[in-house]
Image 1 (cartoon, rainbow, N blue to C red):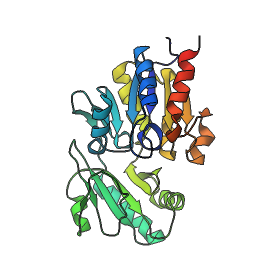
Image 2 (cartoon, rainbow, N blue to C red):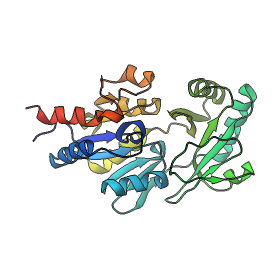
Image 3 (cartoon, one colour):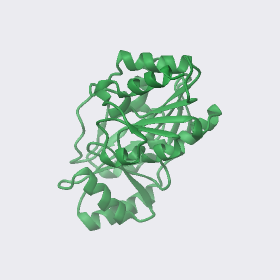
Image 4 (cartoon, rainbow, N blue to C red):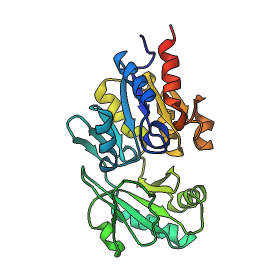
Length: 268
């Protein structure tokens, strides 16, 4: 079998993972066929390494992964962090004060840097149910005591899109703001995106943007689509991502990644 791309980049949540956080047998087989045809598969996720590692281990995944919204390049086979970019905590604090001056108090969580970096959850922050570990802190000052990759923000009244838009308008050029999933709006280092992390990882693999097909479902995947030759949005994707995608496939529940990979593998 031949395959027209050298790199397959997949987001995790809402894309590679089904809603129960598993990867289907069909999708596993399609990815195995693609790698057998000579392409590399790379996971590109907003999750930091500690929230990603167990999924990669379950997949038997031993290559590079881009985690933390592009902040971390992780070698899954060696369980080693190759690069890590942290958020300037002083700038982040200033940015948050500007947001709160516009729209009122926010609930916060923060992702600490490192292979074992904890996600710290402050008062009022609503954590999604699931197996991902988090440490609850009563004193928000604890969040700022060690290097961070990103800060999560929530508002009591505004929905994700409205919060992201208001925060982006308030912070100016201090930091970046992305919507990464339902209930997940993040403050990141300025200029950081999945595209920056993916380009670093691709360079290590000797692969170019023109050789890459990318799959995603949320606005934080837009830079990755812009960088890649071909961007595929899931049927369940945010409308902002669908607008810039080259095509829309089936949902994460219906093996959308496998649908596209199987078609490409059958092309002469």
